Length: 295
Image 1: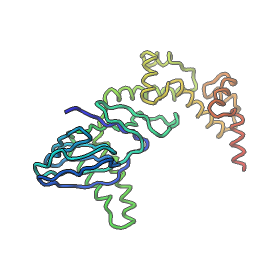
Image 2: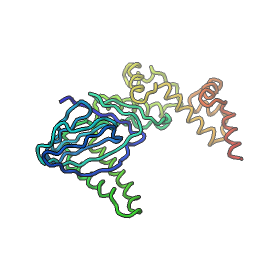
Image 3: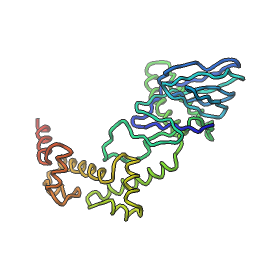
């Protein structure tokens, strides 16, 4: 069996839609569906499921988790040979995802300001077909999800919806897998990012980072671009600009003092960079927001 992995960006978070439980008798087949809009995550309790996605055939056995992609052709390539039972969960994602022979980091469809780049773990990795060591725990969570998403009255439905979403995130944490290489690269990039945030008011070059982390500058740049889609220099600049804006709007400090506080000894160069990001000088930016507040 060829190992396959689903890589799903988690900003915005995957959303739980519905779940259920099904039992097939010998001779019955899984429904034939084209372009179903949700992911279908299955947890096989007993029997064997002979399921195909497009032209690829799979045999899913008891104790395994299996996930079908949305908007693909799903059908049974062979009738059930024995009583087959599984729990299923439908969930949706807004961003693009990838199914491939190895996990891949995917950038979010939401533009997150560099100030908030606090975690590299924004991609959910799922093995398409996986025998879980925590299978019973996963099924227990699914049963709770099913209970909370099937409340009888309207008030309970509202509460049940949010409880089901929270439980679904617990389920994803239970079944997700980590890609060793990606995790190491992501962890290193997060350390570089943390260093840049802690020392943003200092002069920092790629060579400086290389000396701090004892690694070639090109490797540092590659790791940051792979994890965050941005170079260390660009990350540092964006962070400095966001810090400058905070000081412009929350203090009465002179622009020259703010420039030094965010790492620029040359106020003229600071103004050039600031104008590039916000299409106006720091002084004009502060004045425009002060006038808005007055109005």
